[in-house]
Image (cartoon, rainbow, N blue to C red; front, top):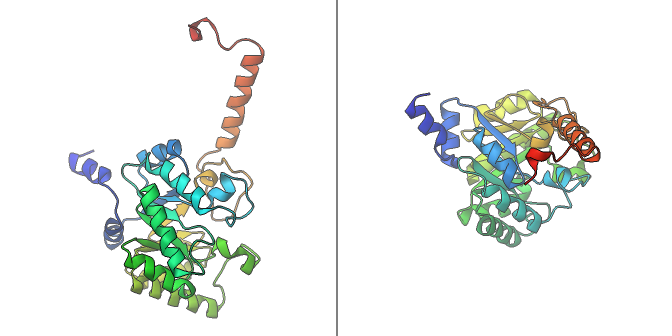
Length: 273
């Protein structure tokens, strides 16, 4: 590897750099992390963006939905992740209830995330209905990543995790919301579980990066780390590609440890002081 390429790979990822990546056709990789140890590994592997996702509610806390996780819990996870990251841009999900109903409360929530965790951006679910909250946060100099399509914080409204924006009216609203998010200053948008054709339209029309999850090819992709590593075995949507099966590997390793302790094989003489 040349010194120049090495320097580029080690250069800190910023919101501006993501736009530059889109402009030159370089795909953006994004993955979740929720703690220091996993953030170290994810960052060193070359991920461009780390999302401290409210999916922590599911994979870390065992909740059925993302709704129960609190602002304090999100800040805790974000602080842990930040300590393990040198290169990636760290984006933190604003949890349900921290921004939807009151733009002043939204700004206060975003400021707490930035000041207490030292993260670099926040992500918010929704379009025109939360415009005032997004604008207030942007005016404070806090970068915002949008999120349209299937928005898990609205699961009780949708009643299902099925593909969104199949009908023309919903697709047109999504397009309108995406244009609005770019116009008011969002630096990127996540599109979740929508038809690939619609994702392509949005990505072609907007100049800001479009990150897909279950939405076909886009300027980049995001997955939940526990899903793609096979730690979470109970979630197998069509869009998920598993890159490892860590649940089985961990299970076997722990079973071997238990067996060695029970048989007095561990610790042996070389492992004792």
